[in-house]
Image (tube, rainbow, N blue to C red):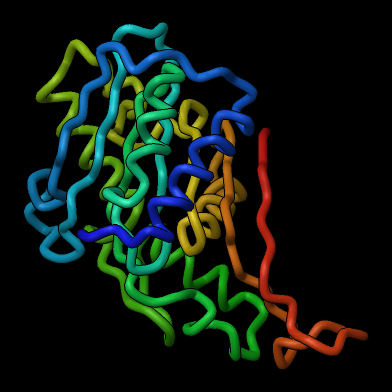
Length: 233
């Protein structure tokens, strides 16, 4: 993936914001490591959207025993958010930039729907797998399956790094130990994940979902296009 100057500038800005949102200072990189893992390596049923997951860990800093997961924006891949992931690793998080099925904006799929639950239902299909009139996501391609499978892969390959702590007894996700974050489309997914699952924290950067009838805001002359948020339980 070739990064544009705008993407690199945004990544550097997001890195500084991330440290601020987590109320922490950033230590030196030290013994930081990077693992590139293709989704298809972790599950043979994953055959598309196969850009690398980016996995960072810094063993020279005290572990926070929390997993930082970052979801790219529409058409993006974890390669475009490396500075963010490096920062999280340097703060003591296990950090995963997760590749998932993200080719279409949620606004293009759901913005004109008459159903106020359209965004939610479509995002849940991306998160957990499912089909509706707007989208069809196989269970294997869902965010949750891809995350579970990369954690199983890492736990088996690097047992001393303790990736398995983020999985439950039934190989489900240990959500209270997970900080979920994302940019644009990924921000919306992270916000909904925080509503559905008991995550440690959710960080949303430049999400753009907003639904009103006919996409108009009452009493306003124009559409409301942007919002973002920072959620902590």
